[in-house]
Image 1 (spheres, rainbow, N blue to C red):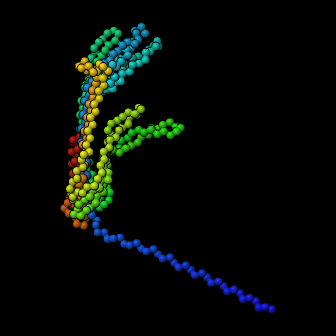
Image 2: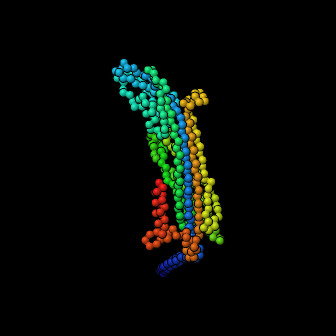
Length: 345
């Protein structure tokens, strides 16, 4: 009988994979050789001057629209010959055809000055013609107003070399906005917009302690006026902006100006033809002049600060932040400035 075939040799086990090499360690960070920073003082000063002069005249004609035979009730309708918003709103009602007319309303009495009670300024009302069929009354009003406002803000911050900094000085103004989502009705919502000074800059220390200021954003926005659009009062914003790069020596002040605006508005309302007559046309016209001047100055003073070797200038710049015991060193100065502002108000 043939010999049996030899059994196959067992397969050798596959060798285990070699362990993956660990990634190389990152190189150590370079030694910190420059830890200088920039102490930036910003002084924002804005002066606002506004003056208003409003002079005008108005004539009103009143006539009887219902007689005394109706339950002894007499009503009057008043018509504005010169419809000016400065003198309030005087409505002409639709004649009542019922047997029991309603009583007279407060805005249809015999006193023309009652329509001016909610207006500021000095006024004079007088009667020109008074007859059983109607009367003609006149009113003269004059207003002159001047206001001044100053806004001063002095923020300070310590910025690392080459890092951006942001300073905002101002507030927010609300306004209405309509959102329409078909098929639903439009919905009114309130939105807010920042107004004031928005300053974004990056300081970089150059050789010889020269500081390079990169003004990324310098924007000044404010409410210019209020416009009525389809029954909704909406603010109109004015914006002024600047950008640039400038070199400033250490502890030297940079003055940013040119952000000045002047607005002059003149409005004249008159009755056609009659209002153009010299002298005689004075009762038939009204003039209003409104002027507003804004002057904005921004002072930026950078100081190089090295905590390893502080200089007298750096110590003076950091004096605002230094702590003495349990209170800040600048507390008395802040309190004195606050008291001075309260006395001025």
